[in-house]
Image 1 (cartoon, rainbow, N blue to C red):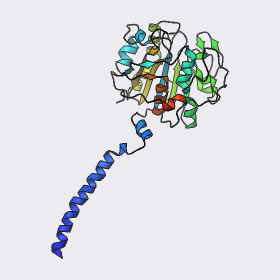
Image 2 (cartoon, rainbow, N blue to C red; image 1 turned 135 degrees about the horizontal axis):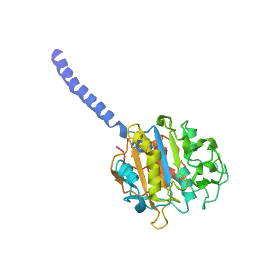
Image 3 (cartoon, rainbow, N blue to C red; image 1 turned 30 degrees about the horizontal axis):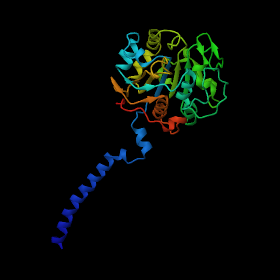
Image 4 (spheres, rainbow, N blue to C red; image 1 turned 90 degrees about the vertical axis):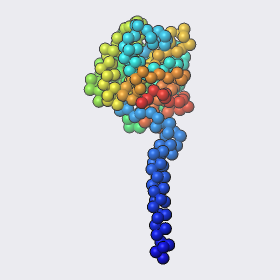
Length: 297
């Protein structure tokens, strides 16, 4: 009996070791044993905050590589990532903002003032609110928080699509003066809309570049070490460059000096922001758009 049992015990040891190795291997590749959608989202970081800044009416070549935009080029692009084939979707401005915010132009084809709360379609803000996450927009030259005026000085409602939706409280539209100085209090996702001069629409590239540096540079520096992501993009080009626009990402999880030559548009940016925020819902055409990849560390 002893002669028989000894070999059995000896065989158990390699079998146990093999089982442990299989278990370890399974654990180490466990990331892949998930659904396609989960694996897709797992490729992105999970920042505490995402801040999206939308500038105006300039082509990629007018900003990227231009001496008129030293902050965008030497800090945000050099220390972050540039999308070299990023595109607006149409002209003029307003429908692009709706596409970036809700995955559809929502029937908007011009720059006319939208009836407040006249649209009920899903959008980035309504998805965040439904998921119990925080949202706000910070609108330069907006007369007061929640003001639904169509225009006031350098402020233009056409660049603020959130006012068109009944499922986005107007109180979440804040003035830019309300942008937090304690960045830990930022919402999960926020949009920043400079006024018609600061966004390069009526003023120069240099003016807009300086505005980003002066108004958001401290946040950008903070984002590098505080699990936050800044995205700067444009609504459309100057109508002379096939709607190719500058888009840069910056923050702790963005690989410095990286770039992507994949073709992306506003729907990809929306999808990426939704997934960075951990949302399971995707608005409009963002549902079939791919995430921006190749720039995350």
